Image (cartoon, rainbow, N blue to C red; front, side, top):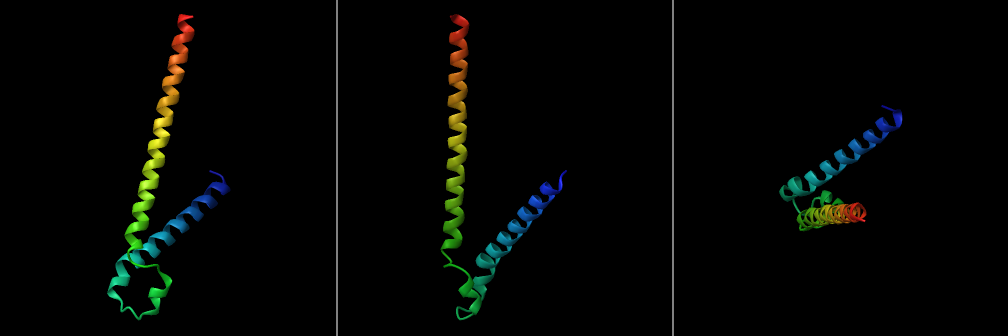
Amino acid sequence: MGSADKALGSVMLLAASFVFTYYTTWSLLLPFLDKSNPLHDWFPAREWAVRLPAFILVVGLTAIGSFLGSTIIKEKRRKAQQARLRTA
């Protein structure tokens, strides 16, 4: 494994750790803190703790469905073209 792969893996792990810590603090810790706490200034409104992951999930599932659909269509076209070439 090259050093570039290790560096990329380290950056990805660091980013995932940051996102996990940020989101966990936002969604689980903030409800127990007083509204006047300055920590609330670092985070968006609480309703976005549900809206944002839901939006990301919908976009991700749409992308996966579109990819699968286009792959299935391309595969059927390729098989149909091969069948036409065999009969010709």
